[in-house]
Length: 202
Image (cartoon, rainbow, N blue to C red; front, side, top):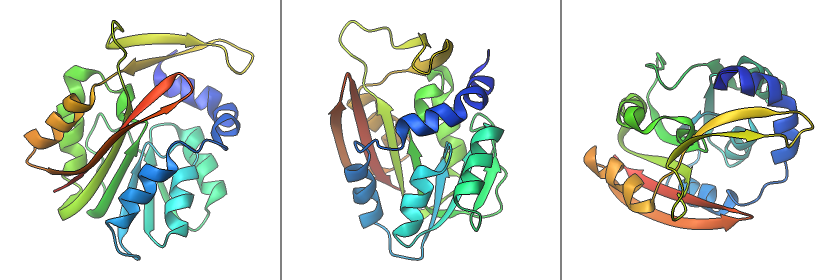
């Protein structure tokens, strides 16, 4: 099963499983602190819209994209008044607007490393000058394979997903290659996972 089909299949169970996550709040609040209320934010890989809702409550005009049609359906149910679109970040997103902020949490970790610069380029084309991008990916552990397909059965059935894992310096380096200024970075642990978070200004 390809990744898009997997997320369509697990969408409702995945949403229930992640409703009470808290690791992302501090980094998201930091990202929000760089933007004025009323500014536009693109939530990339928005899934069922949990983070879109959080950002909207902070006063931002949020647009969400995800390649899973089922996830977008759930996001639209959660926030009927907001704009959500089925889009694959491996392709140009074909959105009419540019954004003051781009929020890419736990999405680039599904992009093969040989394609990461292309995907970042597609996203940064949609970021306004002086705008901010937030990225969160999983940190590679010592001795761990950097790219792998992981089989899971958290929800009572088996499914698999592709992941790429990064170092903090690696992710900072990609953004600096595009001429962005790093304004914030950290690594936060939750359970067995360490999350790299980076915010950069265009």
